[in-house]
Image 1 (cartoon, helix red, strand yellow):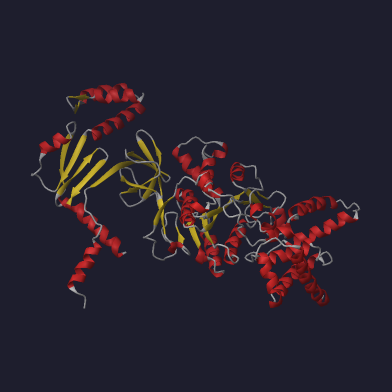
Image 2 (cartoon, rainbow over the protein chains, first blue to last red):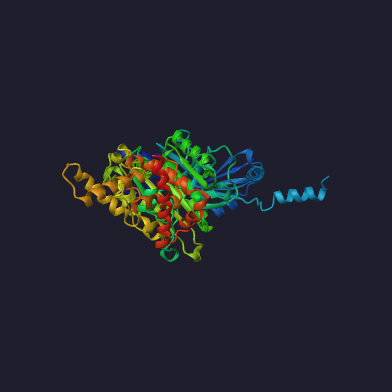
Length: 117
Length: 509
């Protein structure tokens, strides 16, 4: 199975932007064990690539519309992480944007430790 | 009491240059950890040779990029990395921080201190991988790098900026030659630039390394030496990177116009480490299971040994790589590769070693392709034909074993050869200055020892040096140290000195 076919199978596994269990099972039945492994990895990567994970310290106060405008093709998932204190962390595939107070405080600690060492 | 404004100023200085910006990271997930080689998904912005850091602080280097995955070699303990761990890029190529304070230090290939002293934090970040200086920046080799070993300085001279391979079986004194050369650098003559040494211990036993460090310390040579250590217990990646780190440190000093000597001890073990990494990565194996680019691994490393011209600072890096052979087989893959890369080789042989000739250098097959241009005129005046004569002697000696009668000329040549061989013996850790080397060699080539029994030669030499050290002969030694070609008058003075000594030596006998 080449990369092109694999990509086509992944695209076909979705209905209206969501993974379709029926289609996935149908495709899986046609694949060998090795091909199935490749298919699973490709699905995972596709899911990851199309998901935008937003981490915020608490619920509320988030301008979701602005985020949807900035990342129009992404499925937005919001998680809460109180340790961030303020701001947010955005994970877009393998890129992470740190815009939290925790990051700023960590940076200050790092800088002062370096100065004193 | 400190003024309040001073306190505020100090605080301000502390945070000077500090900016709290949002951070962008490119991350990946560990999929497989296989013998120190990690395969990770993600890391789409990683570049070859980039330093990456795992969530537990372990460092790695990007070594292979494919469409879906990135292969990373680990620079630390591999067992802590497991599937699903995150890894992020740092945006920095692998480098080592170097400052003048690194002299006299023992560091890892990443520049971390191994001698219990504080690390070098402020300095220049020198990249481990770098393109060697081009032809326009270079100058021919013309300055000698004295090893202090008579047989090398007289017959296989090395120049600053040269790459001279030391090759031979284990336990025959390859490292001894390298260490003696480092020790001898404290005897740099008047008007000559000092030589900084970098000793790279690759995949060696820690006990051996400790012994070498101790010896350099005892001899007072450690202050101008940097020791880079990737011992046998270190990950293969560190062993593979050690020679590049050593060269990066050498380049720092070369850029400052200094002459640097770098010893790679030894490249065979580096080739083993690279083979191990390549096989784990699944790269196709070639001859002796080495990957196809093993030649390039060594050639791009040794090409960085260079003599720069005046416009580029005039510094140099002289490389003495060491290769260990198995039962003297120099036609194996790695030895032939490195022989073809370097500008000559010093071949040490077990037969010579076992017959008591130490250093066990086989003069017949040892060569220095560019060093003769760097040999001083003084040494050339007395040792010019020495290599040829000694090679002829070895041939004749082989035939003479059959016991046939010899004509007078051949017999004389044989006797002279025996004495020359005896004179070229030299104990370990006793490098000689050029003036004493010239005296020893002149005693042989000018026929002064023809009537001295072969077994008395070592004593003759030792006492000759003691005799010449007398204040009376200070000027003669100073003249020999200048390195200028010896005229007939100078040679007559040398002859006179030896003859005068010989009278006393013979009467004592």
